[in-house]
Length: 43
Image 1 (cartoon, one colour):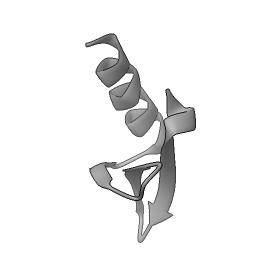
Image 2 (cartoon, rainbow, N blue to C red; image 1 turned 180 degrees about the vertical axis):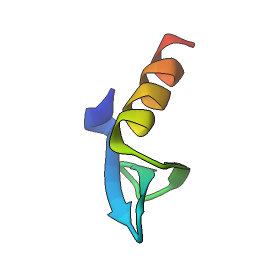
Image 3 (cartoon, rainbow, N blue to C red; image 1 turned 30 degrees about the vertical axis):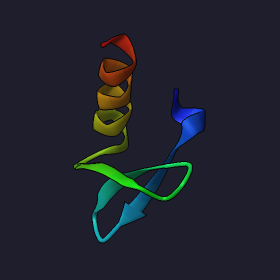
């Protein structure tokens, strides 16, 4: 799943974008972002 997304560290948090650059969500930590992506994949 994360191959289709880019996780960027921006000013103290993680921002998640798709392959086209569309913003999806932000998270406090990398593990939180990865967990959210796994939740999205399971849905």
